[in-house]
Length: 296
Ligand SMILES: NC(=O)c1ccc[n+]([C@@H]2O[C@H](COP(=O)([O-])OP(=O)(O)OC[C@H]3O[C@@H](n4cnc5c(N)ncnc54)[C@H](O)[C@@H]3O)[C@@H](O)[C@H]2O)c1
Image (cartoon, rainbow, N blue to C red):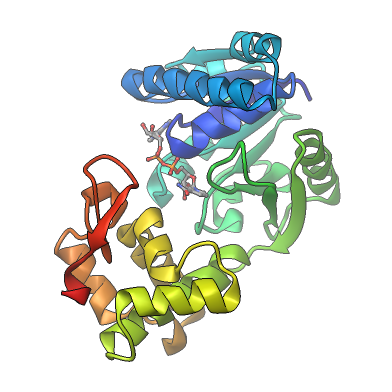
């Protein structure tokens, strides 16, 4: 496995390309947006500079990492030599099913097709291809160059051989792969999102205020960030989307998204990305200004 194609060059795609290229893989980065591709190369260079400043990589490693990445707006050329494809396009079933159908037709028969999806069924994605044994979830965490976990998700038909290969590659990237089966939310979001939802329910029912809830979880449970601030960072729209995946996937009312979460998303209070969620942020940054509407 030497040639890696990364599909989607947004937040996750540029981090995934960065980590593979730093570990001497040849990376072909593809996006439908040429703007997104250009922006990704700027972000990767900035993040590499930060690593050089911190002394975690050398200036030569930065240069070779950048040389290992080719960007392209053609799926055909990005896919044709790939040994492994890691898809990190927008979280939308229709987009991913279409991509996997096309990748299956364009890639070598031996290539493995992985998805970085947070919530879409790997079994469903695999069913869009004629190689379901070679389709797998490779769920990196944000920020990819920093976070050690890769949740490796086996679809219903994923083979032992594919899983073993992805474990070996994950370790070669300096990451810790963990094997999980394909059920709604996998493990990470099945546990994280109901915790965030419960924090929002506690706020909604007046059990405590925004800062009080976050302080209890930070100081009491040693979480680096409270669940409401974490929801702002993830994006309240993303949290709602994943709660709905759990709710529909299990058909169990314990996963029903909190009405306050739904209202905030409808009103456009999405967290950091919109400038306000449970807290207010300086425009375009994660710098916290003050608590938002619910502590007024
Ligand atoms: N952001 C996170 O914290 C996080 C964490 C883990 C997993 N994920 C998953 O990673 C994936 C990407 O998320 P993101 O946050 O990087 O999104 P993003 O919005 O930052 O980037 C998505 C990119 O995909 C591109 N794209 C859309 N359709 C495409 C297509 N057909 N072909 C190629 N590129 C296409 C867009 O132009 C965009 O550049 C999603 O599946 C998401 O669930 C996100």
